[in-house]
Image 1 (tube, chains in turn brown, orange):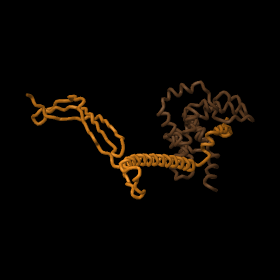
Image 2 (cartoon, helix red, strand yellow):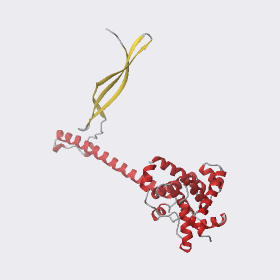
Image 3 (cartoon, one colour):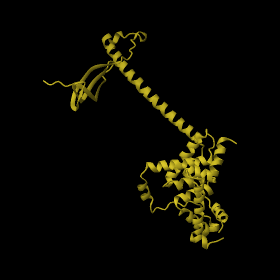
Image 4 (cartoon, helix red, strand yellow):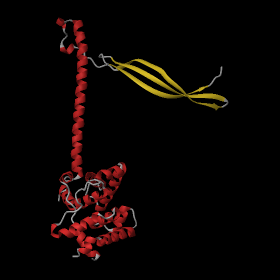
Length: 164
Length: 158
């Protein structure tokens, strides 16, 4: 397989989860796009111009998003973004419309730290040691945050009413 | 609901697709887009270099023509030298014609005693004017630099 084909296949397979994480980390959609592109370029270079490790990409997205947030007045950004609902984090699945809608709303309503662990675990496919290393927290904390996130989702009124 | 069921449901949620503009930005591998960008930059730089070289060449040509023109007048229109006999005029270097320094301001910073003697430390502001002339043409350049210096001098009481 040619290098360009490998890249295309790799991007097709992973870009949506990378972008999901970038959006979770950034305060605006356009920032998430820039952060993702820069993170991919950086990790590609750091990996000797080959396909980078997924955990490294997630870690770079996180670092770049933090750097970006530090370089801007976060308060101003929040005020600008307040009230302007962006596109949803997930694709609506109309075959299971209600459950999907409630679940995605519940995920979006999770506190940032819980949401981050959940995204990295479910859609990023990272292990708890990887997540712990990336977030610079103990593995036990990563695991407990994940459990707590599931607990919060389970407790959400919509899910208790809509048991499959 | 068990954890496994909930995880299965979560896995069924697909992340939103990439916006079209981002998709196109990520379509080529970074090296390829970087190489393309480098090629563009190289082309731009070489274009600019060529333009600057052309301008310099034109300036040299114009200045040498001015000189050969004055020579031609002195020789006379009917006695123009053959092309191979024409004097080749090489541009001469610029020469500094005038250099002036003027004290603009002096400010006492401190009086300090050292080795049994009083010293005055002051800050002086100078203006340096330099007039540079290009010998082959009428161009001249006047450069002004403001500089500050800390000066230390013994203090003498009269």
